[in-house]
Length: 315
Image (cartoon, rainbow, N blue to C red; front, side, top):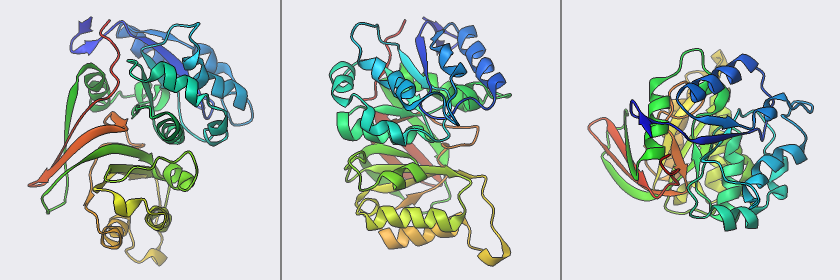
């Protein structure tokens, strides 16, 4: 069933693999919006869990993920992370990768989140080959005081269509056409996992990155780590999302994130495409981690097309 361009009737299960809700009112707004759109939201009990700074113990939080491998329970259409923060790294050795691969490969289930969720996406793709989504979460996005129209519309459009196209303005002057596996997410999570068994080995891909509260020198250091680890230089392009919430000082002397990107483009020898609506800002696309995609840049506009992403069945 579809209402005003937005499908309704999906089963949405909340998962809390990282931090506990620091803005409970945003979580309730997110639930209210999803239910008002005609969806069923389960797993609300995860909002009440607390253990230190986490949304429950490691065992409780990884159980949210491993429950998707339990054949005695029906699968949701969407498994939606409530928020990021920190907490996914300790879960990586505890995930039932074989069980998830057996049950979710080819299944129309959307696992969605961003920020710290990137660590889980890396592990799931590296160990199980599962395609997940970098996209909105319950609190910061669906529960925002002002719901962003692009975020809301593109989320449902992506889950409802076999092939998806997204466009954005970019300052890049060079024309580009490239194809590859679309993957990426939070830069700190990617850099923190590079070289580990939970980091995907993807060459010739379209790598997208974003981060928050990371000053330019740390952004450059993380990008150089990916370059020195043999990751960045093998990609077809680097798609740059939002880098927000950082500060520079007089000592930086004009050293901004854009300068970092120019330096890394030269060092890595790959195209850098800026302006991707993705990250910790209010406007974000929903991007499949691990799906084939095509990128075109011309006349100040970037166009991304992708397919092969898991799509919940229309209710």
